[in-house]
Length: 234
Ligand SMILES: Nc1ncnc2c1ncn2[C@@H]1O[C@H](COP(=O)(O)OP(=O)(O)OP(=O)(O)O)[C@@H](O)[C@H]1O
Image (cartoon, rainbow, N blue to C red; front, side, top):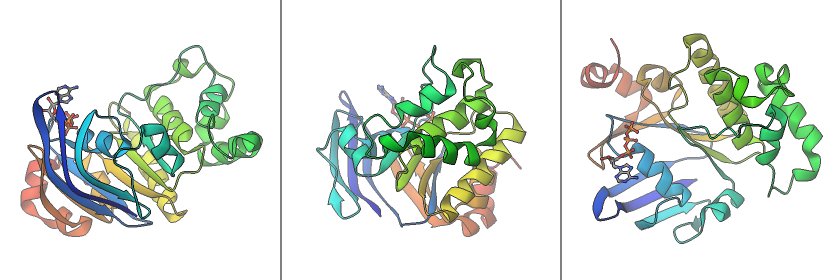
């Protein structure tokens, strides 16, 4: 579904991504792991068209995305939940969800979309008319995911969704990801919580200094003592 080949990316003159290639098949959860600064966020941003200087190829559903602006990539069925969530202050939960539908063809079916989201995210159902920024960090993260998935994208890119969230909500969130996959949504997940992420992922790529240094099934990576030692809190 997503095929990234020979991707290079720069911030100014700093050459950050070097020859990054990865694949995500339809219906998979693929995880991107690596230390701070390895280039995981930069990879997601490059796929979404959020960096000024990127070279290589990003194929999604058989079409080249490189050169298209970010909004056009959303229009093709890709969604992105950035690390910083970007919940809009002054708006309710419902109004924030509505923002995820602004340029979507299913905008006119807002009632159905809200009902689907309320079923998927019971915590949000109780809080639809609450000011979004009065919710806990974990609930706001759920809202960021709900907003990104409101338009029913084929694939969602998530950047560190569990960061700073209390453990009970983290477990809930990972169960949600597994259900999303079972419901047909494809996920590319950047996570520091490597053990939990590998437990639900199908495959994973390990990044270091802007390059992919290892790729394997999640099961093999979880069983690899070097990966456990370097990336899992054991
Ligand atoms: N806006 C920016 N301007 C210049 N350099 C940047 C910028 N954003 C990131 N970098 C650099 O790019 C490299 C990769 O950063 P990136 O955020 O992609 O890493 P990461 O693997 O997502 O790490 P983290 O888990 O810390 O977010 C780092 O060396 C970082 O300092």
